[in-house]
Length: 162
Ligand code: ADP
Image (cartoon, rainbow, N blue to C red; front, side):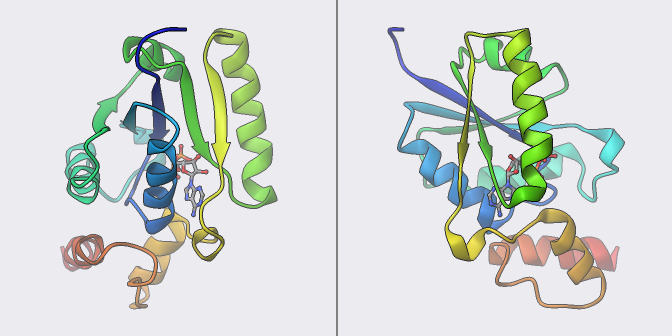
């Protein structure tokens, strides 16, 4: 395939963590343009509105010129195609992620066999990080500073204060 290589990295990013950011950085080394796709995903009852998640991700990737942040509410493969992507980027943590990711990649392959799902591992120290645990720790007053950027920790604290 000719032209720039584009990947879509989809997720809820509720909120974006240091794990997500590590995957994004690693992804930028593989493609010319990386589109972070922020899903509206109302079924997950996110803590942050999609507009808030978009601006948090944009703020954290501001130093990465090849990364763009877009929200989407569509079939992932249709979104990827609309972005001219040939790659779906996903992060893989422990076995717990595998089952779901395996199934999703398999079904997406059947929907569009021209788009390849590529899995990356975050730095070992960042692998246990998950947005839902970050939120749980913060709700109980724990320090999430090791898991998310400082500005995101402040956003979570502000959200919890209402
Ligand atoms: P989703 O709702 O699609 O799972 P998430 O925002 O939770 O969205 O995650 C987006 C992607 O980032 C998923 O592929 C997930 O496995 C990956 N990911 C999240 N946290 C980490 C981490 N600490 N290390 C590696 N990959 C991660």
